[in-house]
Amino acid sequence: MAQKKGKLIILSGPSGVGKGAIIAKLFADKSLNLAYSVSMTTRKPRNKEQDGINYFFVDVSTFLNHVKGNDFLEYTNFIGNYYGTSKSYVLNLQNQGYNVILEIEVDGASQFLKNYEYRNDIMSIFIMPPSYQELEQRIRMRASESEAIIEKRLNKAKEEFKVQHEYDYIVINDDLDIAIKEITDIIKNNIN
Image (cartoon, rainbow, N blue to C red; front, side, top):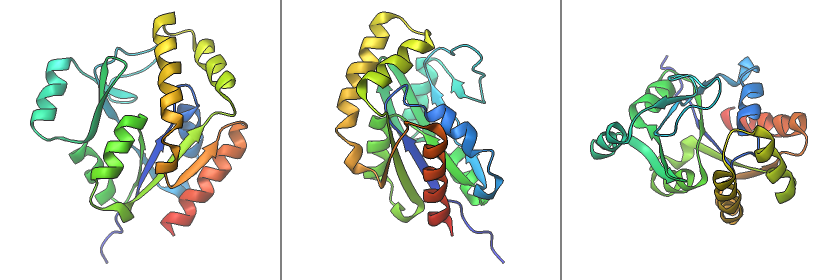
């Protein structure tokens, strides 16, 4: 009997909305059979981020060579850094039967949703903060970026809120446990 191909689960939303915390909790549920799509970026690692685990950290030249080689399912430039999802990496995980979580920026998700030919393989979830003010507080509490970058992220978030209707599901991350339960239910309903 052939192995069932896994689904693609796009988790997207503004910077600081809690995507990383949500994903960490989702992976604790082994019944979801999840694999994480490690994206490539030209951004410098933040505290405790590891190459090949959080991202594949590369220079701009290496990234653009992958673009020329048509090696991305999607890619985008977000606040001066490139981010992209490797085609071969994701398809390999799917073919092994894993449900692959893609944590991608809104621009990349929009590109992916418009261009990916196997739409039935995808579920897209937009994570919203309870309010803009709460999002600002979360970004500032990270204390990992300059004021100029924080302002860019907040301005970008205002634009990203406008495209939430392009996603299959919208989940508000006000209470982390409730958001995780909602997302778990969405995934289970789509993989069964």
